[in-house]
Length: 270
Length: 287
Ligand SMILES: Nc1ncnc2c1ncn2[C@@H]1O[C@H](COP(=O)(O)OP(=O)(O)O)[C@@H](O)[C@H]1O
Ligand SMILES: [Mg+2]
Image 1 (cartoon, each protein chain N blue to C red):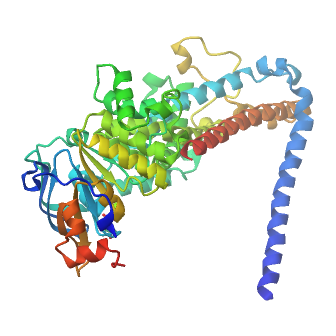
Image 2 (image 1 turned 180 degrees about the vertical axis):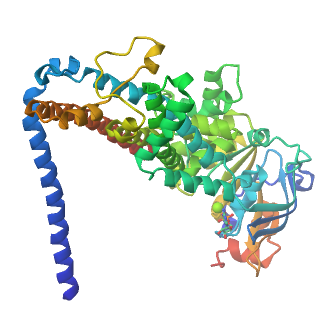
Image 3 (image 1 turned 45 degrees about the vertical axis):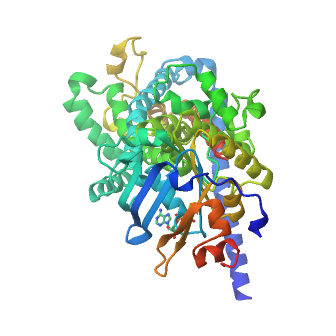
C-alpha cells in the first residue's frame, strides 16, 4: 500500500551523502540488561533520518546516545563509538553541555518549562550569557517552528496554556534557538492529533534544509512521509535491539532487502 | 454478611472518634475564647508585663516570638534548602549518604528538649562570646537546629516532585546541573519548600521547652534595642509568657493567659493559611 504513496525524493547520489554523525559498533546496557547490540549507522547531514521499529526495541535508547542524555540514567553503559563531525563524543575531553547545545533534542511528551513562552525559548541562550538581541533570536526560532503567528501577541503568558501541538512546536523552537547542528526528535507527534502532527511534519521538512534531523517513530507512514533515510531496528532472539537495515527511505519501502523489514512495513508484523 | 457488619461498626467507631476529637477541640476553644476575649485589647498587646494582672500585656513576648521566628527562618531556611538540594541532586548514592539521610529523618523525631540541652551547651556556653549567652540569638540558633530536619526533608520532597521531564528539557539544551537546579527545579519546588518551612516554623513558634532550657526569661520589662545588640539581649516568647501566667493562682492572670493563647493561635492560623495557599498554587502550577 505504501508503494502508491508519494515518497520523498531520493538523494541523487545516495552513496555520496555526507555523514555528520557516525555510529560505530554501538552497544548499550541498562544495568545487566543489554538493550542495543552492535549498531552501525550513518546520519547524513541536512537530511531527515527516521528511526523506525516496534515499541521497546531501543529507538529512544539509540537517539539518547547521540547527545549523551543516557549519561543521566544510572546504570547505563555503552560500548563502541559515536562520531560527531569525526570526533568521538564519548571521549573524555568532550564538553557534554556544548555537545548537547550542538545536538538538540525534542521529547515524546511536550515538556515546556512552566514559564512564559518567551522565557522557554530564551533560556538556552541566557545560560550561555548571550549578548546579542534576544528578542530577535526568539522571534526567529518561533518562526522556524511555525509558531510565531499563533503566539506573537502572548509571548509573556505561560507556555502551559498552549495546546499540546503548540507546546511541542515550542519545544522545537526552544531547541532551535541555541542554533544546533543536529535535532533529535523522539516520537514528537505521538501525543498529538493528526492535524498537529501534520504541522510538525511540515515544519521538519522545511527546516531540514539547514539542520540534520533524526526522528524516532513507530509510525510507518510517518517515516515514509517525511524522511530521506530510514533505519529499521528490531530485537533479535535475545531481545537485544539490532539494526536490521537502513538506506534511502524509498529503497527501504519499495525494495526492502530484509524479510523482517518487509513484514514490518507491510503491517504483517504484530 | 459478617464483613459488612464489621465495616459498618468500624465506620461508626471512626465517626464517633472524629466527633469526640472535634468536640474536645471546640470545648477548649470556647473556654479560651470565653476567658480571653474580654481581656483582648490593643492595650493588652502593647503593654509590658506587670505584677498587676489588669495592666499586664504581651508586648515583649510578642516581639520576642516575632524576632525568634524571623531569625530562625533566616538561619534554617538557606541551610535546609541547600542541604535538600545537595541530598536530592548531588549526593552520590552510597552508604554514607544513606546514613546521613536516615539520621536526618531520625533527628526530626528527637524531643525538643534535647535540642534545648544542645543549645545550652553550644550556643549559650561554648559560643557565649558571639551569642551573648542566654540571648535571642542563642534561642534562634537552637530553634534553627530544631526545625532544620523538617525543612531538609520537605525541601527534598518538593525537589523530588519536580517532573523529570523538566530536568531533561534543561539538560538537553546543554545546561549544567546547577543551571537546571537554579532556574528550573527550584522555582517549581519553591512553593512546596516554603510550605514545609512555614509548617516547621509554626511548630517552633509554639515551643517553650527548649527555650526554657537555654534560659529564656519569663519577665522582660523592656524591648531589645534597635541595633545589632538586640541579638544578644535576653528575651521571652509567647508560650513562656502564657506558661508563666497560667501558673499564677490569681483568676485575672488566667484571663491574661487565655488572651495570649488567642494571639498565639491567630499567629499559628495565619501561618498555616499561608502554607495552604502556597500548596494550592504549587499544585496548579504542576497541572
Ligand atoms: N531507564 C531505563 N532503565 C532500564 N531499562 C530501560 C530504561 N529505559 C528503557 N529501558 C528498557 O529498554 C528497552 C528499550 O527501551 P526504549 O529505548 O525506550 O524503546 P523504544 O523507544 O524503542 O520504545 C525497553 O525494554 C525498556 O524497558
Ligand atoms: Mg521510545
